Amino acid sequence: MSRETKENKPVIGVAKDEAFCFYYRDNLKLLESFGARMVFFSPLHDKEIPKECDGLLFGGGYPELYAKKLSDNRRMRASVKRAAAGGMPIVAECGGFMYLHSSLIDPEGVAYPMADVVEGECFYTEKLVRFGYVELREKKSNFLSANAKIKGHEFHYYDSTQNGMDCIGRKPVSGQEYACILAKENQWLGFPHLYYPSNPGFAKAFVDKVRKYKKR
Image (cartoon, rainbow, N blue to C red; front, side):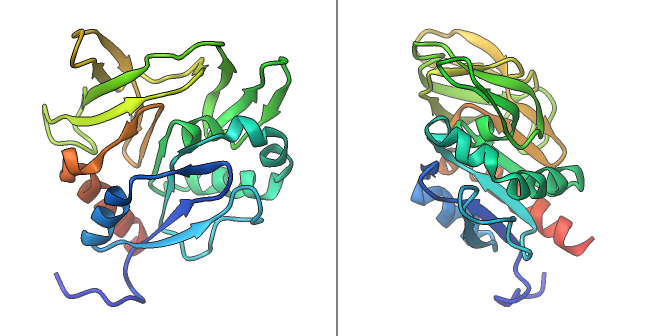
């Protein structure tokens, strides 16, 4: 492969503001090590995703605390949905996963329209859901090689009507297993916060998908 310059590196737009603030620095550094360039944007304050984006990363945070403002930013929501419909690679974890739903229902029962990439609702449960460390493997190899695993953890009081069925999550202490994650060719969407260094192949696969999208 020819050496990529700063100008032609694949660009991953990283959602980062008051609502999306949980990122492992190691994860971003690993994406960069595989050739990606990060640009940061705010689903709260910006009007659209950055035009140079070839992929999107939505990390964890507290979208439930900013649900109305996220919902009122219709242009941003529409730009995210267009990007997803056009096949742009997207990884979303926990709060980012919540934002991609059709709607987010707050503790008072008010439903706020979100980005509508995931056809489902997120709702408050009043308790921690599937809390703790988890190991994930795909049923069909996509972001991970066959039978490979990636480690992560879950910490959320919200749940979804559409958690996905494309991976098997396993609690390493109890051995409990459950289906989770929406994993399509260019999407990995779910509640678990992933730690990419536990399987660098995941980060490489994401960057490769972003690079392929850029060149199409």
